[in-house]
Each structure stands twice: as C-alpha cells, then as structure tokens.
Length: 488
Ligand code: NAD
Image (cartoon, rainbow, N blue to C red):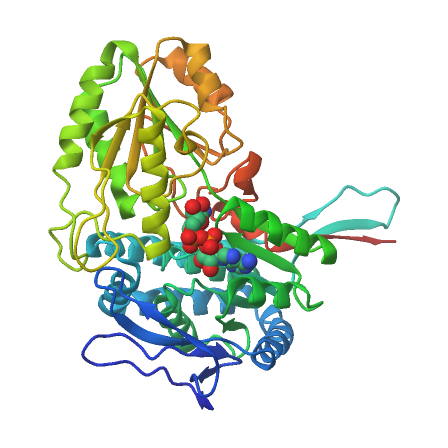
C-alpha cells in the first residue's frame, strides 16, 4: 500500500520503518518478499526490508522518465537550492542519521559523524558545481555562422552503492545525478538501507519533485539487471567489487550507456628510510583500521625500507594492540564489527591462508567471541606473494607489512596487481616524490598523507579499479553529455 509523504520512525531506536520510495511515495512491505536487516554489532534484527517487485521497478522507471523531464527543466539555481536545503536538513537530523548509520553498518559513531560532514559537503559541492555546467562558443568558420557546445544532463541514472559508507556513497550517487539535472533510480546496499532512506527524506522535504529520485531494494543482481535492461536508463554508476563491476559493465554495453565504476583496490604504502616513522605509524594505524579496513582506499600492503622495517613492524603491532574494539555506539571504541557474517568468513579465510603460506602473524588473526561479527585488528609481516591476500582485496582489518631495499623493485611491487585505486608513499625526498607521482599506477596518490578524498577532488581508479570519477568537476561531468550545435 502506498503511503504518501511519510517515513515512519521508531521514536525509541531512531530506526525508521524500511520502505521503498517511488514517485514521491513511501511504500510499506505489504505482501512483498523481504529480508531482515541486522545490527552487525549484536546480530539483532533492526527491520524488515521490502524487495521491489517488477511492478515497483516499472513505476520507478516511469517516474524517472517523467522526473527527468521535470527536473532538467528547472533552473540550475532551483536545483542547487534543493540540494543545499537537503544538506542543511541532513545536518539538522544528523543525530538520527549518524545513529542509524552506525546501527546498521557497525561503523564507530565518531566516524559516522565525520562521514555526515563529508556527505553534506558533497551535496553542497554538487549544488554549486551544477550551476557551472558551462559549454563554449567556437570561432566562426564562415561569416554569420556560429558553433557552440552545450552540456546537458545525460538522462535517468541507475545507481548502485555498497554499505561501507552508508551516507557517503548515497551522497555521491544522488548528488552527482541530481546536481547535473538527471533523475535517479537508486539501489543502496541492502545492509544499510535506512540511512539512504533518511537522506532521501531530506531531499523530499527540501522540495525535490516527486519521481526525480526513487529508492529500491531487492536481490542486487535481479534489480540491477532489470533496471539496466530498460531503455529509460542512460547512465549507470556503481561502487563495489571488481567482479560485480565487470558483470554490470556487460549489461551497460548492451544499451551503450555511460558508466562510472568505482571498484576495489589493494593500496600499497611505500615507507622510505627518510620517513618520520613515529608520525607515519600514528597516521597509518588509524587509516588502516578506519571502518574495520572495509574501505576501498584502505592502506593494505605496507612496503617498508629494510633499514626501518623491524622498528616499523614493532611500532605498528604495538599500536594495533591498543585499538579499542566493541560497541560502535560507544565513543571510546575505535573499531566496530565487520558488516556481516560473509565478510567475517572471508577475512578469516584469507588471513588463515596467509599464515599457512608462511606469513608471520604479529597480532590478531582471530574472531572475537560473543554476539556480532567482530574480528581482531590483525598485522601480518613477511607475507609471500603466493598468499591470496597479496593478490585479492582483503577488505577487512588486516595490515600486510613487507620489506624492500630498491626503488625500482618497490615501484614494480606496488604496480604488480591489476588494481589501481589508491597508493601512498612517505618520504622527505623531493626527487623521490616526483618519481612516485610519475610511476605509481593509481587514480589517487597520497604523499606523506592518507587524506585523498575531498568534495572538490576527483575520486576514482584506473586499471581494474574502474573508470570515471566521483566528486570534483569530473563527478558532475560524468552525468553530462556534450552536444554541438552548428548554426549558419
Ligand atoms: P558484494 O560484491 O556481494 O557486494 C558489494 C556491494 O555491491 C553490495 O552493496 C551489493 O548490494 C552490491 N552488489 C552486488 N552484486 C550486485 C549486482 N549484481 N548489481 C548491483 N549491485 C550489486 O560483496 P560484499 O561481501 O558486500 O563486499 C565484498 C567485496 O565488495 C569487497 O571485497 C570489496 O571488494 C567490494 N566492496 C567494495 C567497495 C568499494 O568501496 N569499492 C565497497 C563495498 C564492497
């Protein structure tokens, strides 16, 4: 049953009723298939998530077609005002949004608050950048002629986001599409649906016309296949794993639609002998275990110069043992659970395999007993190349520390994998910094810093880590098409 303009919230837990949001209506489960959404810190059920039926998806597609007509006709400053207002409502409702994000993702609450700031900044960025979708006028080729280039919104976007940034991923997907003047059918992760719904409510309350945005859930490949087979969709934006990205690209190819693919990574971190080891350790341990390592740009392979290797391993291990793991709603805890039982099994298996292959387990390497999906922060050193973890994205709370002594050899190791998302390096040598910038194969390179994501910087990878960028002027451009008009 459709219930217009309403999103029910449990006043005690802050957790909203899980609904679909289609054509401006909040749609309850009714007789639809559904799945439980779990609190990964306790294993308890937070809510029952309805799966969209084919009829629901058809309604969302029809709404996106009509919504695109309405939204693209608005003045850029009108669209900008809606996005800005939505960001401001998110800030006002920040306590509920961050609590819900932590409840369903297990991300420590302080990190959810940082993510709220980042996400509202992203909406504000697209609100502004959408006003600057400029074209250009070319020089005349004959008297009285005129040629000009205009940028237009590409059309309805199908967007699919994972659970690791329950606010950040939706902000990027919705912000880019709506900022460019596109409509959007969005499938957030089934693990973290309520955060995205609360954000959609902010957009609705900010004045987003009905149908411009729909939020649907279901079995991921069923929903994405259905949407991508529709002639209505003109662009796909996906964040997730490389194998799923490849399968979605094949579907997109059949309709020749534009794609932005933000896939996995296996970030190398090169630590040279002139780096300030203590300063690097402080930043590195925090960056590694942020969100339990479930971050696509998470520093993964620490490649440390031979002369500081022992000191680095000892320091990293000591700091890792100090990390407080537990209830993510408790501000004192720095790491919460992993997202679901599958991730816990995946991380256990890849770490066990590394130890069997001959890696040294410096600390961690075990599940934490009790309810929820907790795993100890783990450090492995001297990991051989044939271990799975040296080749597959671990996506969890584990650091690999290996040694190097030669510049060319460490560059070759850093570039060895098909991934090319983020790479980091720590050194005081200006000459080396220049070479690193030229030679590391990654879409984002952090030198003496792990901070590589801001609303105005392009976020995206190369090689099998995907293509296209989110944020930056590139993020808006990805939702625009170029049209040449030649007048005589
Ligand atoms: P997964 O690959 O099953 O799911 C990852 C996300 O993709 C989920 O949100 C899921 O709903 C979505 N998804 C999966 N198949 C889809 C499809 N056919 N169509 C549309 N969406 C689809 O695995 P998981 O266990 O949730 O995560 C494991 C792997 O996913 C990690 O190892 C990592 O490589 C990758 N991942 C990457 C990011 C990132 O930020 N790039 C984020 C989360 C997960």
